[in-house]
Length: 176
Image (cartoon, rainbow, N blue to C red; front, top):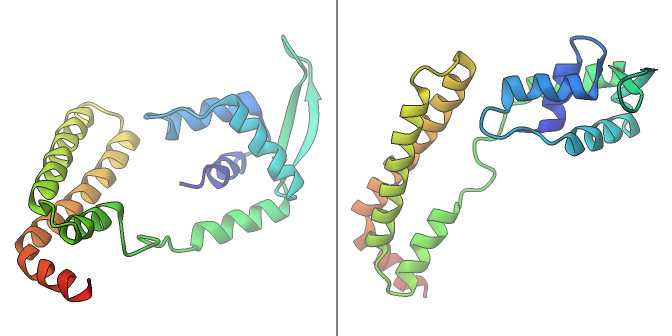
């Protein structure tokens, strides 16, 4: 997820302070990992530099003055553009697991054991996520469902690859 554009989207509902933005981000997106204050303020500085937001005032607070930020027209345009851009499902066709599997075959290592280890790790993660999903708020359940579906796809790939290891071994030897 592009955190800066997610923050820009949250800011598009109206002017806000950095502290309030962090609190809102964490309540919606930060269930597994909150965003650091330093990252919020560094992102706000970059968005000001890029003309996506502007500082519209300062208010006294219990510590330093609280700066208030608003999204600019350029920021609204960038956000609208981003919301309509399709996400690329995978930037590359070769994942780490793919590379490990091929290298295990090249090195005449036990690729089947490697795939079994990964299968067990995926299944353990599925169990953790399924447990976490029970009683979780709707937004968390949707994020967990997304992760579960990705793990299911990986498991299908692992099963398919396990069934093809003999042919893959022959193919790798032809190239090597």
